[in-house]
Image 1 (cartoon, rainbow, N blue to C red):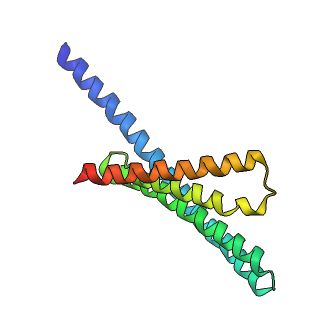
Image 2: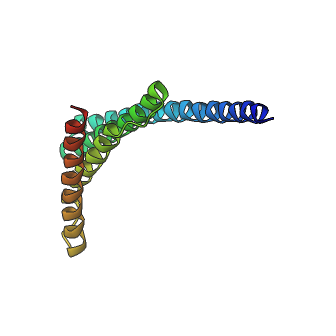
Length: 142
């Protein structure tokens, strides 16, 4: 009787694992499409530069390229899970750092207020914490 329950349990776990795997594949495909669309958005920035809107075009292109990097790092986490069946932390941390740097780059486009200054300080602290976490992970891996 116990053996039958063990077999049923294994079958249920296999079905659930297959479903999870398919969802991760679907998420990876969506992230790939988003990364491609983000790169196309960078082309819009380059067109703005060619039309004489250099500063806004560069900001648009940089914004899109950094967003693409964030998406790729998240996709690396998903594909890493599909390869190894473990969640990789480093790509998530890199995506976080890139997102915070991206945010920091665009603070100068807004008027400076106390709230904005607080956001800048928090973003800098987040970058430092994420960087320390990456350094700690590297030491743990050695």
